[in-house]
Image (cartoon, rainbow, N blue to C red; front, side):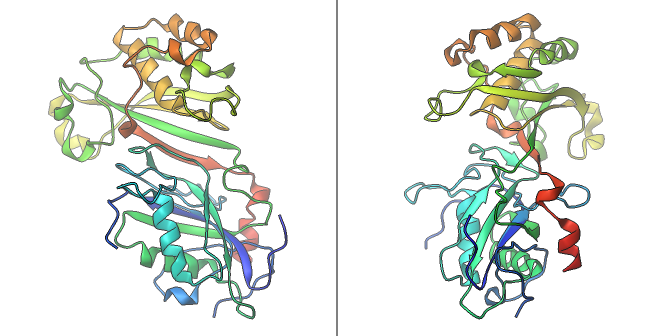
Length: 349
């Protein structure tokens, strides 16, 4: 990447975000050129902020070592930028709209670490951006960028938690070492309308009163390691270009809790979390793995069927009406090498 011109820096930031809403009607510290700068909170005027940053959102990892943006979306929209003729905006649209209030010389583009479908949530996502200011104006401190973006994001359920200056060779998507997703389930509901009101669109209530969790755990073991996950990829435009070979480092199933669930224990509901970790995932891979494991828990598939599906290497071999819905899926975290995000150096600034 070329060296940034005077007045420009790169910053990694993080944020938390809720659902994407329908489209509405319509003197900081100096920094070395070619660096990105960190971000935190506040509400100063937008014209006081700028730099290159990576943003981070909710669930910042211990030590704050990531430099990116973290959206938490609840319904519709998704993370990625949507086209102008679509009725719902993605998180990226809102971020870039807010960033224009920084009055950069050129339009600001956000590069998000993980792309999610409409209806998928994110506890911790990441993004980087470049802010180019007029000649003679210093880069914005990270704290000013965070404050300014949050000020202009106020109408939307999106928040930036922190940002850090990072080097020009950092990329929120391609520098990531791993991504971790959680899929939330609830059992004990005879119908999806019985999901607690504060859990709606935040978990999936599959049919049946219970799941055979030991069988699901046995089946999950077949997914671990390096495989051709073609069967667990939805057919999309990426198919001819993206390798189906992925290495799944984690596939866990464990009991969890619901929001204030101790107040309705009498209902006998049980929450579960399925957690998956890999450097990257194929299109809808996590939802298809989660749906297949639930089918095992329901007895519709046997544990050995998961291995057979992997060996078929054919998206059309995936059982019909098995993929888990988007609402229960959360991007939990995105990991980076400590060397890519020098938080100590940022703290010194």
